[in-house]
Length: 129
Image (cartoon, rainbow, N blue to C red; front, top):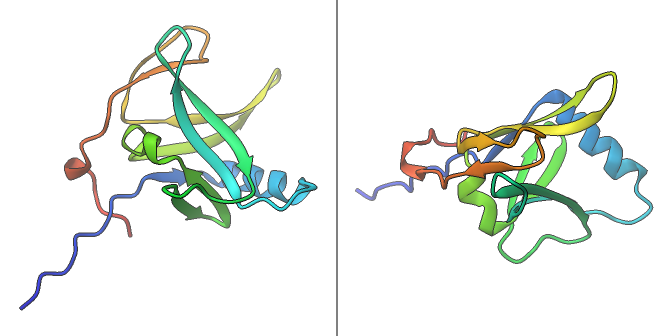
């Protein structure tokens, strides 16, 4: 009897609002877009910042997340920092922005521009459906 491979943990989920906004942005683009690339980089007062760019082709090692008709490409260097995160799109009186509920976030700066992240323990996460 051969063992079946363990399912991969879900890297990222999108709320309906986030998926809708990504689809709208991609539809409005005048270039062919493969998806929204999500990553993290060092910066800000808390240590790290989320990055987002529309790209025409996935990177060689990008993880592709398809959720609610939207496509997000997660930079390979960001996967362990984003495992189990949920991306949302929030609109209020003064702004509209993507936000993250990330179990790997240990703190955030007061202005909300940067976060402190720890790498996830993939063994502790539930498998993808």
